[in-house]
Image 1: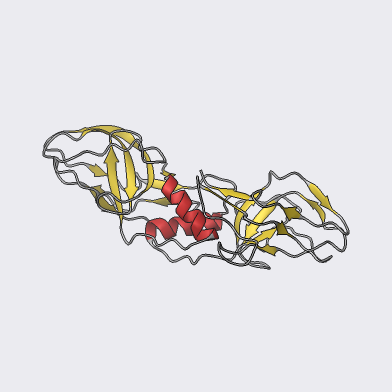
Image 2: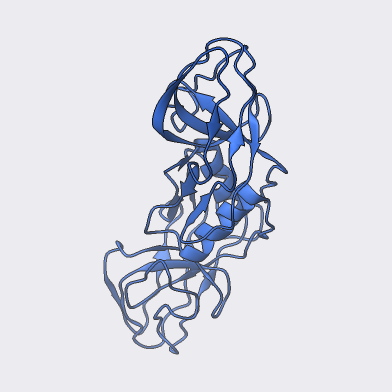
Length: 266
């Protein structure tokens, strides 16, 4: 199972909260004799001896995952490539940015005369369960690895009174109705406050206080936080059931102070 690289986490967070990400027209598969690690520092691609990255394609994202579609065959080795243990995905045939990486099911020593190949579905990239909705996980995977359009969304903070799940939507989360309750929009960086900052270390947070309208009656007990893409209904993007439960009564104002509302990928 493959993991997103640090580069990808930052680009995808910024796509949702700030500047739109332009995906590569072609994704390339590379091989490595060591774990590339999220920051690419461990990448050890073969050099010379006929080694060249190869284009790879993926089927449509489903269940928070994209999987390689079709075998990828490399050129015949004209010398040793070493023992290949890992794969990596890139946005260029050489150099470029690493998008994701993972371990091969079996290590393989490549020697002169070998023609290495990677079987269909060997390379997969997925989001773990939790925090990112199924909807957004599939949209982001299709955007980055299949060049499928996904416009940068509007973002609104919502205050659910029941726990949220990966498969929820903006219309299935439980929110209070009435008493001046309304979702609070958080605009893209550079817009009217409040805004998100630019992603760094795979995190974005709010650059200004996020203040909801003062309650004119009880909103019940807030047990989660959700980020959705519309003022009503819409799609669930991110969520957190780990916030401290808080009862909101008549006259209360809910605030997330600047820098306290973090969204991260890891």
